[in-house]
Amino acid sequence: MTPLPSLPVPPSTSPEEASTTVKLSVRGLDAGFGATRVVRGLTLDIPERQVLAIIGPSGCGKSTLVRCLNRMHELVPGATVGGAVLLDGHDIYARDVDPVLLRRRVGMVFQKPNPFPTMSIKDNVLAGLRLTGALRGGRARPRTDDVVEGALQRAALWDEVKDRLAAPGGSLSGGQQQRLCIARALAVEPEVLLMDEPCSALDPIATARIEDLIHVLRERYTIVIVTHNMQQAARASDLTAFLLHGELIECAPTERLFTQPSDRRTEDYITGKFG
Amino acid sequence: MVRHTDREYEGELRALNDRILKMAGRVEAMVAQAARALAERDAEQARATILLDDTVNSDEVEIDEMCQSILARRQPLAGDLRFIACALKMVTDLERVGDIAVNLCERAIELAREPALSPVVGLGQMAALVQEMLKDVMDAFNARAPDRARAVVRRDDLVDELYHGVLREVLARMSQDASALQRGIHTLAVAKFLERIGDHATNLAEEVVFLVEGKDIRHVGKRAGKTV
Image (cartoon, rainbow over all chains, first blue to last red; front, side, top):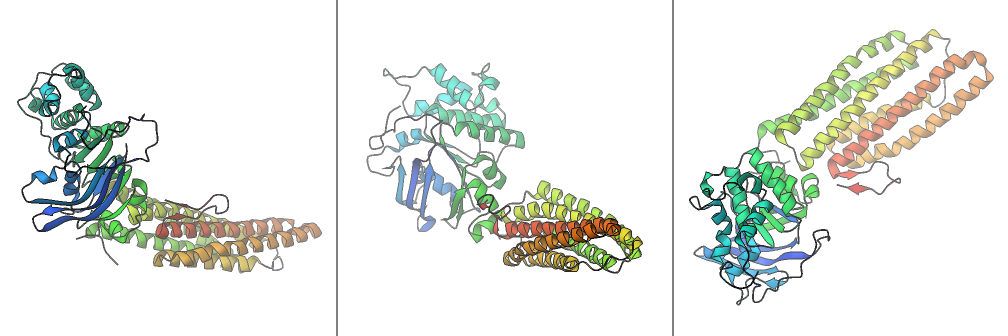
């Protein structure tokens, strides 16, 4: 893959190595729309190859925060961003950083599965690579069949679709479509995967498949998942961050946050004593 | 105090709390009546007390069901989760104290058949102390007062001291007077049962500390105190 001009790719590490390295570091992040501040002076470290869940009531800034982590927030007209987000210690908002290349390293999966419905399953997987020009020429050009199989394998979808790769993406079930979107995100070989409520449109079985997938993916990727589902955060994440009114109230190991939160506001939120 | 947004859930947790207090009240009454039956050599009182155990056993089953229902339907977290975990353990300790009260009553019936043994120093004190511990720990639970629960834990050392005193005294009497053997064995059993009630009160107190603070203070000294 092509490294970003000012964001050198770190040397690869084996999954067995303990992850205490900070992959993403959010420093005094302010983000909003026009005069409205949605995220307020938020500071947070996200360790490499761990799953961070972000929870909080509607409108607390969860989605805005994750969209700042791969510079998608700035695509919204009137969006404002201040502070810094460091990927492997390098500011992703530096002037010479290409946001398109950044998004190859920090991929995203959205709330509603959004495959290209008429495009084949295979082409859906390759869509991200085509968009970034990674399939055009050059000696390092990957073999598309290998990329498709690898991404679908990692998204735990290969066995279900390997005999119908030419079928349209829209022919899959909702849960399969979401895993196809995950495969599309994985095809570009990201280092971080942002998931914004990836299971909110899925039934419990499809949700369990995605959560099982997250357990596997955490060995290779740093994952940030926004969820309204507290049980999902408890099941799927290593760390949980609680946001309220755009501020980080508490970030702790998931088991501790859900059994003994240190802040009264966290306790009130997760036990349903708000609003 | 901040209440749950879901009032039905709030009601379920309050009902569970009240149910535990009610069961504890019944268990305390059983222990008090068993102690009185022993002191007054009242077999009738002992038999009446034994009958109360059925209700305590039903309490245990019903409270277990309430906990399971809340776990399944509400997926409690944080303080609520600790409350359910604590309730499931407390109910077991309380049920065991009820069983021990029955054991005390059975010994009271046996002892009432025998000639009275001259009062054993410390046995009455033990009975009074474990009753106080039971009352205080349930007050600490109701008030969510971990300091009061810790005071109960500390008092268990005194129960153990009294128990060893009773043991020495009764064994001495048994070695001197063969006719006191049967009564001595029953009395030793009574002392052991009272000592076990002290242990269960201690367990309950440790559960109250965990409920309020999330700190596991069991077996302190054997392992470092662990916070979840």
